[in-house]
Length: 262
Ligand SMILES: Nc1ncnc2c1ncn2[C@@H]1O[C@H](COP(=O)(O)OP(=O)(O)OP(=O)(O)O)[C@@H](O)[C@H]1O
Image 1 (cartoon, rainbow, N blue to C red):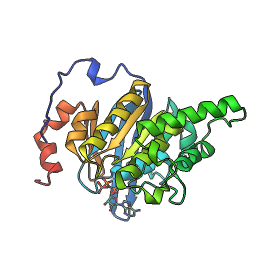
Image 2 (cartoon, rainbow, N blue to C red):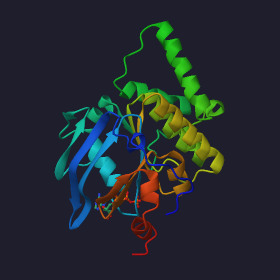
Image 3 (cartoon, protein in one colour):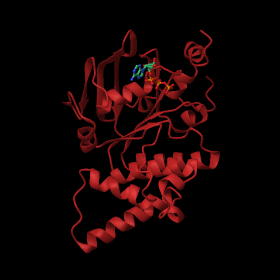
Image 4 (cartoon, helix red, strand yellow):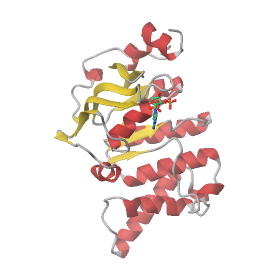
């Protein structure tokens, strides 16, 4: 792995001054004889972007599934703002403010772009809109999301008729609409052209500015370098590093694992 830019390690960029939003303690999950996630402990701090990297099959998606309750944990626990959240279900995780994307996007294919975004409000814990003024406010909010994701002209298009990049941005638009505190994004940039992924990075940076915490599974090292405050490196279910980009990207041992040279 080669860092394209470097940063100086200072007490500030160890991020220990930031509040811990979520802590994973000894998380584990096996499938048959395979330890997909093996005793992973780490902290996600408020307003920090952590990218989760590692070879195929390292356990990245499984870790997301353990966090949000899509999968039951064999071992370990998670705390959210200092409170333990055991046996959590996906809808409960969403209610707490964890929002996630999936590699297969999970859009409502027959619904329009607008409707796909609206379902986020119906399914979330956000307050029901009852007054015309609040309805107008929400409309403005959606218009702004459509603008940021470059979907304004597609608002009445069915999800199934969108181009690949537009589908990825619709998934992101739904995440913005959910107004969560933690974004868990599973390869949001895969298959995007440079202009699209620059837009994606800008959206993430803007959200982080407002205090959102982000954890991204990513294979594209340009994106990893462009967005990460921290990088967590998983291999065969084990967390081998959780550190600044400078430290992780310049570690020759991790590079040889990442590029399959071990
Ligand atoms: N539902 C499942 N049943 C059986 N094995 C599974 C299941 N889900 C994941 N695994 C196995 O667990 C390991 C970790 O898989 P996971 O998808 O979490 O890795 P990943 O790092 O996200 O990989 P990729 O980068 O290829 O998406 C792999 O060996 C995978 O085959």
